Image (cartoon, rainbow, N blue to C red):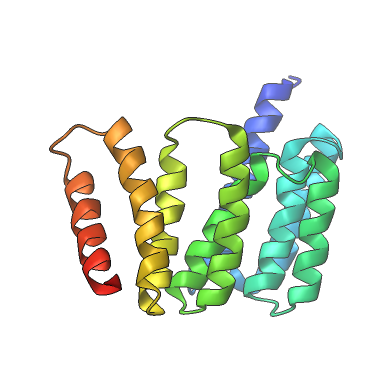
Length: 194
C-alpha cells in the first residue's frame, strides 16, 4: 500500500517534534544517539518529501539544534540554521518552532543571551506571519520580559509586557487568570522602572 504525501508530511512532522524532544529534554534516554537520530530524520524527510520541502528544512534545522545544545558548537549550529533558511527562506513559519524551543531551553538553562537571540529570531518569524493578536507572540514576549526583568532592565520588560497585555486583552476573556497575571507583572515592572 502506497502512502500519500499527507501521510509522509505528518510522519515527518512527528519525527521532527520527537527529534527536538530527544535533544532538548534533559536526560532523555535517546540523547546519546541524538545526532544520528537527527540526521536520519533529515535523510528520511529528504527521501520522502524532497529537499525543498519545509519538513526537510525543519529536520536540517534540528541538526543545528543538536549542535547548539548537545554538540556545543555554535558555528556548526549556525551553518545548519543557514542551510534550513536556504531551503525555505529566512522567515518560513516552520523555522519558528525550533527557535522558540531553543530560546525556552536556554532561558531555563540560565543562558539569557542565547535565549534572547533565539526567541527574537522566532518572534521575527511570528510577526511576519501577520496574525493580529497572535498568542505565540505574547508567549515569546513574556519570556523576553522575564529575561529583561532578571537583568534589571525593567523598562524594557515593561515594554514587552505592554504588548503582551494588548494581545491578551484582544484574545482572552476579561477575568482570565493569564490576563490578571500579566497586568500584575506589568504594574510591578512599571513601579520598579520609576
